[in-house]
Image 1 (tube, helix red, strand yellow):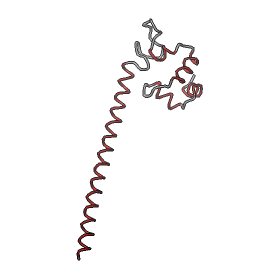
Image 2 (cartoon, rainbow, N blue to C red; image 1 turned 90 degrees about the vertical axis):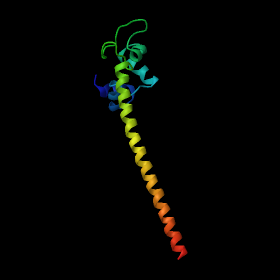
Image 3 (cartoon, rainbow, N blue to C red; image 1 turned 60 degrees about the horizontal axis):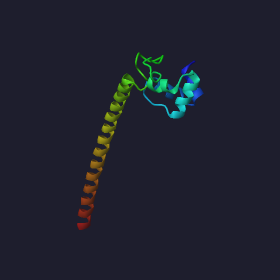
Image 4 (spheres, rainbow, N blue to C red; image 1 turned 30 degrees about the vertical axis):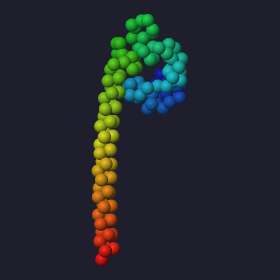
Length: 118
């Protein structure tokens, strides 16, 4: 079964499913139910990496790694930290732009006042 096939079966895009496989995104409850039915596995195996009460890893993940296990969470955390860094840069740029525009407004007000006084 391809990613496209699985994505179509659970009602998401192939790109979204790919991100799900890589642990970059999470799946909603309805999607977990659909995936569990599709692969004929209990939902807790998809969510926790093993059947409740066992230590058996889920096939398709590294030993002991659940979809939201430590390695997947570390990758997601790194991705979120990169996004936060980019957002901080955007905010800083916007703050600089706002400050420049405030200075320009102040200069225009001074110019207007000087012209009115002449």
